Image (cartoon, rainbow, N blue to C red; front, top):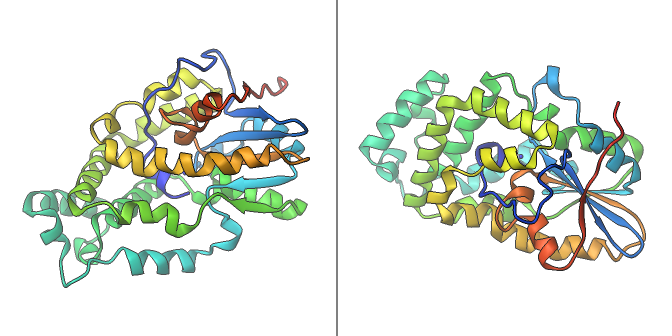
Length: 293
């Protein structure tokens, strides 16, 4: 999910213009002389269940250039952690309890303790960074590994094959969306994260089953509930970014070779998603139907 989709796999269903019976997590946009493949990513997978759907192999084989939300080959963990500490630390001597209020802080303290994260270790962090930290801890507890996620698998394969990797945005652009939320909005984001953690295992299993089956209707349904009540966050994490990405993707269509664009599933199937934006711009969108194995 970059890192954000792990916490925010939610979207408003976009089903009117899609083929509800399509069984693929990969979509094709046709240019005059090439194809741009749009692939729905899940940023973490379990090691024992990490094999990608066949449509990914088909699109990868045709693509000469790989595009992701961020060029992971140019961002190491140390750089990312340094950015988070620099931008995700509360300023002016403010504490997390002061930022959240007593009730939210007490609830957070209880759930962080269940994950083995002492609240004292989080006290200087902004609520958005606390939410990401808890989400990482929860999914690691459930057996998920970012190294087995879609992007990391594609990255390793592309580096072995000598295929260039490009990013649609920078770390500043991606995580800066959360940094710019007000403290109250960050508190609401943390509330949603804590609530989601209660059913993380069941919800994630259902989501992965729909993603693997390419069940667009089911996927959209699973991603459609919580963020209706938080349009500011949905806009910051999804629609604003999609609008920035779409001109880049359309420029790829004027090239003479194929591209594989891998982004979080949220960015394709949601209201204001890339598939919807492509259709609005008059582009033909078709699912990639891999041969049966």
